[in-house]
Image 1 (cartoon, rainbow, N blue to C red):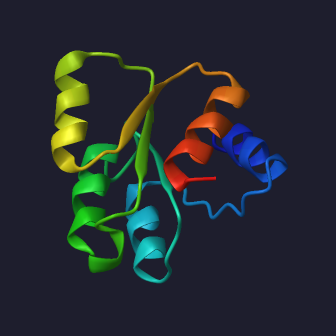
Image 2: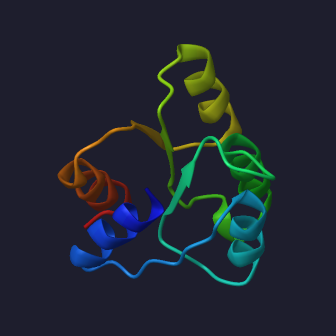
Image 3: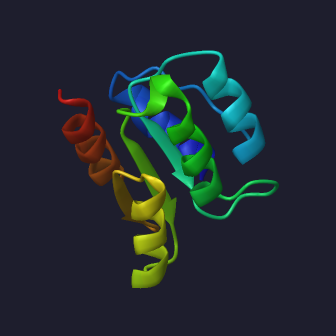
Length: 109
C-alpha cells in the first residue's frame, strides 16, 4: 500500500518521504517540515491516531493537513481521528485519482 501511495503521489509531482511505522514517522517529522501527512490507521508500534496526536504537539505541525488512510469506516474511529487532529479520512481501497484530488485540495494546489 505504501508503495502504491508513493508512486501515485510522485507521479502527480509530489516529493514523498516514507516511514515504515508510526514511530519512524514521528521521528522523521521532527526533523523536517512537510506540506501534508498521510498515515495509515493500523501500524505497528504507534497507530495512526496516536501519531496524529503526537504530530499535533509539534509547533510546526499544528496547521499541516493530516489525512488518515484506513480500511475502517466506523463513525467512532472517524471521530477519534478528528478529535486527535486529523484533517480528513480516506477509506481503502481508494482510487489513485482520489488520493491526488485530496492532496491537491488540502495543500491548496
